[in-house]
Length: 202
Image 1 (cartoon, rainbow, N blue to C red):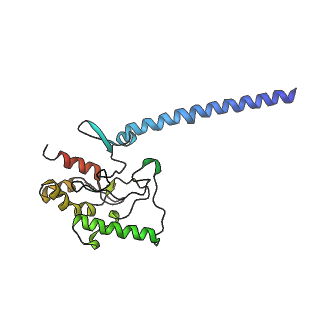
Image 2 (image 1 turned 45 degrees about the vertical axis):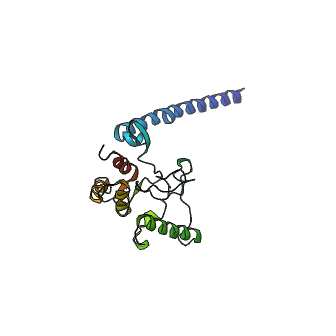
Image 3 (image 1 turned 120 degrees about the vertical axis):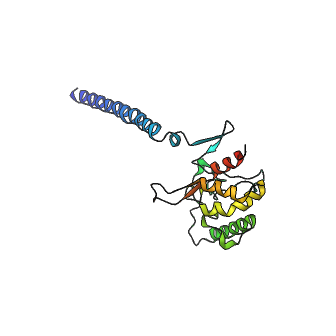
């Protein structure tokens, strides 16, 4: 009988502990962190949704492609960094290719992309920056380097009938400095830049 009472007492203690920790860690902690996120970084906490013309067109935190129905890059838009996530920028399959730097398939893909980027933008292959031909570790990087943005200016300007100086000024205004001035590198958010292009002159 004593052992039964002990077992019941032990189970009740375990149940109370489980309920307490569920309340503290599963509910209170989650609400606390959500509240801090909403106060400190509301845009990021809500997915960085970006709207254009009153309609959500993407997230500033996740890259996307700017291509036609056949997957061909649209000349009037700045092109994003390549993606190895699923079929491209798939948030449910975030990953890189996991190929090593000397992998033959990766090397071939990089050379193919280098040729395509050079031809598409009318530049020499040696002038194509690394982020134009390599995917990020997540495959979802929404940014490109200022160097990649700069080499696309002439092509975008011609496709839109704009002056290269106007497009260059837009790229400069959307170039973000490294965090705290020294963490990381300068970047350009491709989606925000392309939306600004669409709104130019409206």
